[in-house]
Amino acid sequence: MESPAVRRLLATSSRLGGPRVWDLLRGGRVKILMYHGIPGRERFEGIENHYRYNVPAAEFERHMAYLKRRCNVVGLQDFRVGRGLSSSKTNVIITFDDGYENNGTHAFPVLERYGLPAVFALPTAFVDRQEALYNDLVEYAVQHCRLPRVVVEWEGERHEHPLGNEADRLRLYNWSMRLCVTIAQERRAALIETLAAAMEVDVRPERLFAHEDYRPLSPELIGRMAASPLVEFASHSVHHYLLARLESAGRRRELVESKAGVERLTGRPCRTFCMPGGAYDPEVLELAFAAGYECVLTSDVGPAVRGARVLRRYGIFSRQDPGWFVDVVHGPVFEVLEKAREVRASVRSRLGRRATR
Image (cartoon, rainbow, N blue to C red; front, side):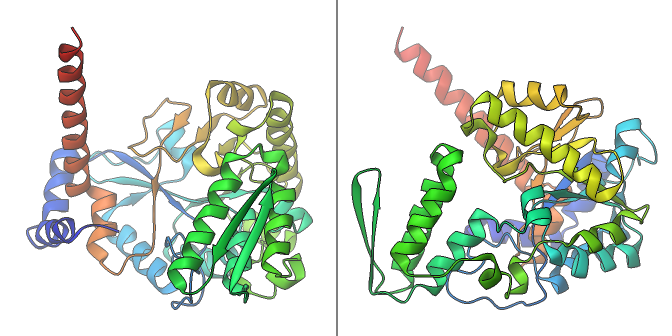
């Protein structure tokens, strides 16, 4: 969350028309927005949606109404060929990662209502084989654990986690998630099985999918969305593995099999790969293009550059302050702060080099 000082800057910028001035100075840029789940509810319990990746449907609709009114929303393929871009407004591309059912039941009708195109990235084991996403499994297990203390034995080590309050629960959640993203990804299923057993929580898909926030898009709903000219589908891998933590053969398999799976589910060519967890290296990119993807969308932050095959995005989170969303879309506050951080880092680096001479 932003500091009080940054929140004051956002409020002042919004009140004085900073975003409009920024468009006059820097209009014509392209920003790709990255959403995840769009749940129908607005209230969450315990650690649910702690980091605000899920944007409630009502808040999402406010975002779309704003984009329709103030921005030029274009499809990813139109951007890539230079069609329909504005030279005066901020151009926006809307994307969704993870393939949640609520992307189709809550987000898609809003997009249709406003006539806004979007890209939906599908992890094929989730939508085709009903394999729950690892982050949801961890969240569900920690949220529903009723033990006073959890003891996890992993790789010969014993880890004890008291659960006396919500702060303890959040520490267990963060520890579990860090382990999931740092281990070799082929071992992640075994780790989650170990975690769930230690917490004494049933995490079978039928348990998770009783909660609508965790459900995947069905093949039937994907088919209905694929019939819309507003929708493009992308791959988000097979198992939502962090590809940089796989061996080469596993990376290639995730890229090739998910592309084929998306094409089979949608009946359309799959040209785009959205990087799971933002974790990649040069080999992952090389393998993605060799697999037939034309562009790769990452979680790196920054405007999109026409002609580039690797495109950056801006993660969109749930925020009470509408000024946050407006500034992510247009600037200037976050862009000025980022530039200031870059300058400070550059100065420190130069001073450090001088000190070692």
